[in-house]
Image (cartoon, rainbow, N blue to C red):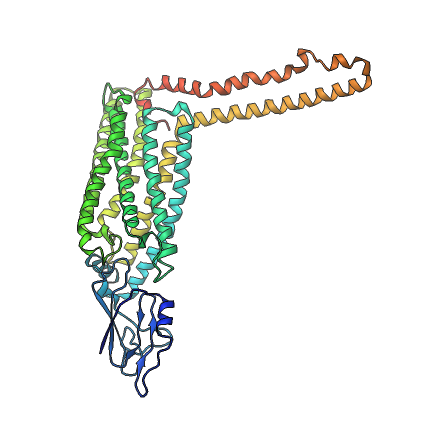
Length: 485
């Protein structure tokens, strides 16, 4: 006897209320109604099978059905076919029949007929998610601090740092969206079974969130390409006007990803539209072959930047054979920075492109920890490389800190002298009241110490200008404009 039931109001409270008055017919054996965290299973007669539509869960197709069997003793069967017990009071239902084709393939890859190893892989995924959350949070702080520094000092306002800022903005956008989705999953989707809450359960908002995530991710790779192109041109092109290309860089850096992401989003909308009533939020879209609409250009960026690096090294070797000048040192610094940057950005994405080695737990653990560590902490690494360790940035910060400390020291000295003068004036006035007129109108010498702060104020107002002036002279050297570590 089959019982087909809907699951529209599907949560524990509804399940308890729905069947609180159920009493099994006299002389018959029935399985009690149970809530298994995904579905509310109705009371079912012994030796019968309850059948329901699959729940509205990520990766499930609700046009499919799932079954739970009540054995002849009136107990829900467990996975191995035995009766329910204290360890498994709700019995077992094979929810793998609900999975979409993409998620079903992933399920088989993870478990591979070995439930123990599959659970170990799931545990690894949960731990790497924690690692990723920590790394993204630290990267966010580092990137925001770098943006504040770049925007604060006028001496750092050149084409090179403008490109850095755009790359950092794209990375900040990716980190913010990813953290938002992770928090949404942890709070609303993972811990509130049966409750339709959060971004993942909100039509349109969920799809828009993932479209924005893929857009800023593509923008990040585009600006990484521009970083490589700019560095390559500064080293290899004899006459290169850096300012004349910035508008084109900005158009390509933000406009190109719009076209790529829009093309992918349109394809996804048509692909999922016939199933929109059954699949939630483009579930498993990254497992689809259409995802290469996004991954293809990103892979091309890695390849092009690698070619740029090879050509830069070629130019370096030629210059080393010709002479040993300060220019060589600058090129070495630029190449060192690029060698650090390109593997950091490239290897991470390549690891995700080649896929996880799911056939072995140890290999999967190594891949998972390495890939997620590099991806989550890359914001911190890039901010450190291109901002915190940058020579111009350190010069600007040192200058500002030195001026601030000097001003503070002068202010303290001035206040102390002013306090001492006021004390002397008060004491003399109290001793010679007849001469108070002269003391109430002090001469210029009485206020002379206060004027000592004026040169420091002028120095502070000119500090950025002087740094900018110094930077202008340094940028007359083509290679010095690339990086200063």
